[in-house]
Image (cartoon, rainbow, N blue to C red; front, side, top):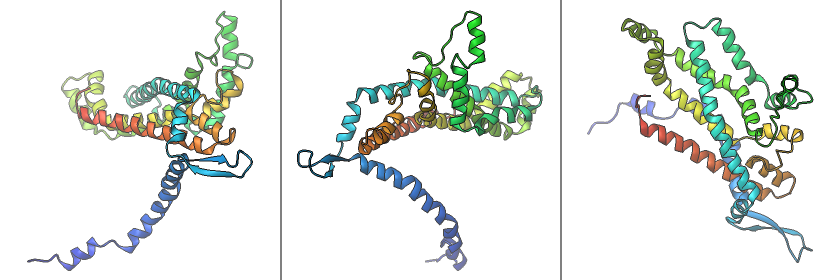
Length: 305
């Protein structure tokens, strides 16, 4: 029987320096990711009730899934889930298409000043979400928007914050703020493609469209999938934009999105347990949608576009 050399066995043992480097990440991951999730799940299974016919001190009671049943029996919360799914159907394809189009335009050989436009498209990402929503809010209100005033003088009365348009108005704010960020991810993938592939394709007589369709898109497919997953997760976290726009329109109420409904239950209604259940529901939906999409695209493998 042979034994591994001493040097091999020493390399197999974790070095103290490795733990020094990994331990801060593990501690932060547990404290700021795992612990809040566990706390929310535990909180969602309890409720606070008054004892003694409402005259005694409130007591915390274990109710298991009762808060989840209450959440799904609330028509306003169910409507907010449907509204969020509709927003995702609008925002995800629009975001991926816009970011990919911008990346392909800048990466094309005919683009002028690509560095300038790269910074220009990325700049909105540096604007905080609250500030961006306030800026667009002024442009959405006819009394303060020069664009809407000009359109009104032309006979076009448009109200972006009407009940039928507000989701598109919010989607526009999210698109303006994050399309440049996703574009940078796709541009990094395009820059990593060896130029020899383009030269070989041109020597074979391939057109610019053929190069884009048969070389660029297949090779940046993992980045497109990454951008899509980021966008799915981001849309399910919709909170800031409708919260800031709510004072400007009657189309947005306190339960417009699931996150707003949970916020309302926690801080306005004083029911943090039900709010925790709503938050867990949104997290589970995000998990299912993200991994469902990944499973779908991985099942397709490397099929042609």
